[in-house]
Image: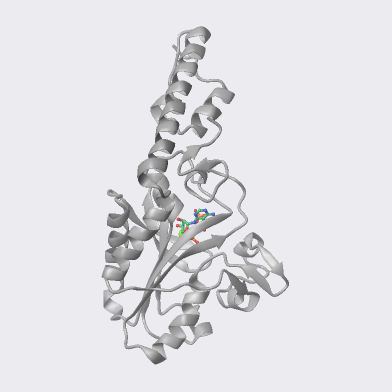
Length: 277
Ligand code: ATP
Ligand code: MG
């Protein structure tokens, strides 16, 4: 009763998005196992084909795009303004986030030339906009961006080299309301995605210091609040809250996918379905 899948079988089942239960099945003989493998593979391939058919005939857009649209609608309805900023940022902007040569994140940055890189985060651009908007708009200033960020990551089920970040910020709110506001913003995003039973956990980030993370088994989002030690660099003195989510990770949990790759920009997967079926 303790014969399990071979490594190759398990790998194939994972890429076909087999459930935990399917992946942990045990058998009494090799013959039984190999028959079961064929059966499970057939079932999963059929499920994949059905999902692709549904994408083609009904859904027409991958979950990543649908989620982005739902978030834009929910956030703009709550008074947040969407912004779109460049994916190419300067070394100077990154250094203002304290990410310079000796910083852990520095080695994860994709450099285009000595002075410019692909953004690993949205915050430098949002800080820049805050400074101008403080002159132009009344507080509180509520802006968000949804856009691609780039980080060199050693491969794993939770990390992509290019992923979609939502960064939601509110600048100029009463200092004593920051914690409650962060909880409300986390709830707004999680409700929109349709994930319940998440936790808020205090952790330490290499960029932001102490952060309150949104967690459901894995880290889904990280938040920070100001006044903050980075604010001086940007000329910001008002209290603020900000929270950043990875959309592919949100989808991975929502759709019970086995890895974040299947939810992201890919040539191997289409809307969560492995294409070699
Ligand atoms: P981790 O510790 O898991 O590598 P992080 O703390 O470095 O993540 P943050 O800088 O806090 O990530 O980014 C905010 C959110 O963006 C994360 O909570 C996660 O959902 C998402 N995210 C970060 N890096 C990646 C990545 N390489 N691939 C996919 N999503 C990511
Ligand atoms: Mg984090």
